[in-house]
Length: 451
Image 1: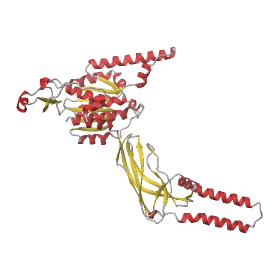
Image 2 (image 1 turned 60 degrees about the horizontal axis):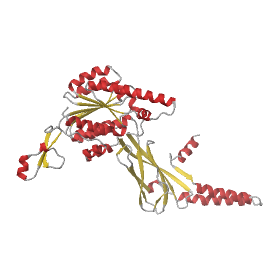
Image 3 (image 1 turned 30 degrees about the vertical axis):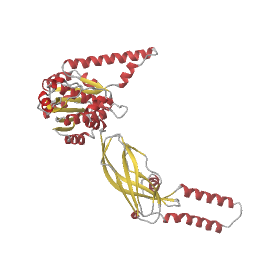
Image 4 (image 1 turned 90 degrees about the vertical axis):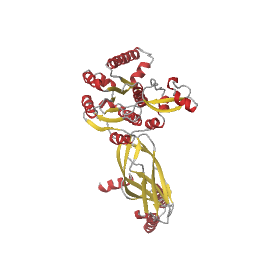
């Protein structure tokens, strides 16, 4: 049984050893067929033994031409960090110290959550170094140890394959996808306008003075700097920006309802990406950002700090948080948020809006928080519910289903409006627009001087 398991491991790229190829088996099958046909004519057992011994000897010569492990040097080049749903290149470098040419196929110890196709039948010339690239597509955040690399070598004859196992430990972190964050950092205005959202202009004189620049069509004439215009003989205007140094506290719910699957990932994945984009926007604006991830208990806490370098601290702390199969403890998270943020701040909660809003006892705690802090909740809208509302019924059953969906939607809006009357806004957005919705609401809040 143990010998069978060892042989099976070799066939599955899990061990070392020499195994026959299909080519060898085909040759040997032809030899057996030839001997079977010749058996119809009488020939001696001596002839059969000599022919068999000669055939086995010829087939075995190829096995002695295979390389030894010390003759092949192998290395792997792989990024220490990869973004989820972002293709990355892995390079396997093979150096052949022998005078023979080999064909190699490989299988790397990539986790099952990485989609990839390994190279097949790559040529390794004698005395040369070859780089064999292949792509990986990580799909699940977390920390992974990539260790073993399996190689199978064949000679020109290709009768035998020799498998070698190399230990090349690499620790790889799969972090949230930062495409939304990068787009914002490249150009905040283009990022928001591209999504069809226009930033409300600040009231004249509101915010901090930024600089004096040339007047362009569309600028507010009330902001023209007449003194500088007279000096430079050109129309100049004052430019203002939102005040810096505000406090932003981001809460990320990791409870049971955040595990609802979407087209790409789940609610938690999109919430983490949106939270990082919002943090980047606030840090770029000079604000202080703190992040708390929670479910039934606290999962990760990042104290408030300023500067874009703080974004890396946030990323390294929350990149591997996962959904818990438990209900979230909102009072604990909000109490902890107040303990680490004594000053007035904007508290942004990423969670399931309906789960939070339908618990009336939360309203009592939130009224207290509202007296000192500015609160907003962001969630992902239910696409199935929206699709059911937009359907055109073609039967009595479908009409009943649509009416039930409409009734549920109206009830949700009534609950959300009740919270909004108490100064506790709740916003729902499609999964792909959650990040831009959170950033636009943050900027609009600053521009209106609410924080």
